Image (cartoon, rainbow, N blue to C red; front, top):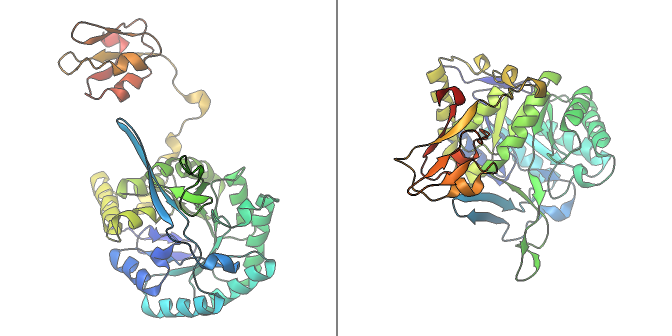
Length: 385
């Protein structure tokens, strides 16, 4: 079984990369990533703006929202840039290349055109295998200037492309007018890949103090829930791009990684899962990919990469005949009434010991199946009645 892939002209032993963060902020942490199975690391971003080289504390919080059975969480963070200036960063890059066997990708975020050129050349001279352009950091980047963002990102990619010969990858924000338009723009400018996506930028408020929580301003946020947005855009972009795509957002297990590969991603980037579960989660993600491949009989990643794309229907192709109705199992029904309260078609009525479905009213929407805590409801075709 061969898990190796190509990404931005780099040959990787598997499709799992550690995303830019403090997880790859020091050579010691990079080695922990390598030991855990990562195929490459993206170093913590070097910023031209010096103020963000010092991070506040605390800067991480897990936000929980619990409404009975419905529970969600987000990792809310204000992790800042690498603490180092360009000279020290380049020194650490050289050291990383001496001590690691896997590719090391430098990450830079600049405010000026001169900075993009200078830092890019410094990273190439330091031996970086590739360069990730962080134009999308939730805390400070081109994406949030309010100017001609899409055009400026393309210009930066072209500027860097003319300055260095190593592969360049542009990390996009999910908060763009058209991610596909920007991806095509950086491809035209000579980029070798794009990352879809950086984190969302958000805000949480403490209602008692009536002020922002933690450090007092906006923060990046993400978590397992964030996988669906990149899946949508990667699936839409894949057929329009020749360059490689790294999927980033919500990868917590091997199945998540497989989903991204099925819509055409070349690799996946992992961050939050490692912060919350430790570096060893990388091994579990890889094992999940292997288990999928073994179960399906695949010998290489290329055999299944993009397999889901041809099965995504166009709007006019979606089957719209209403052939399903709900059926309640009287042996499992606890008579809690959740299905009755959630049904917008008045198709469920209260009985003495259980609830019942009025077949001719049921629209077959499936919501009752999802809210039933006893798994007592299923959808059947109307002809089975």
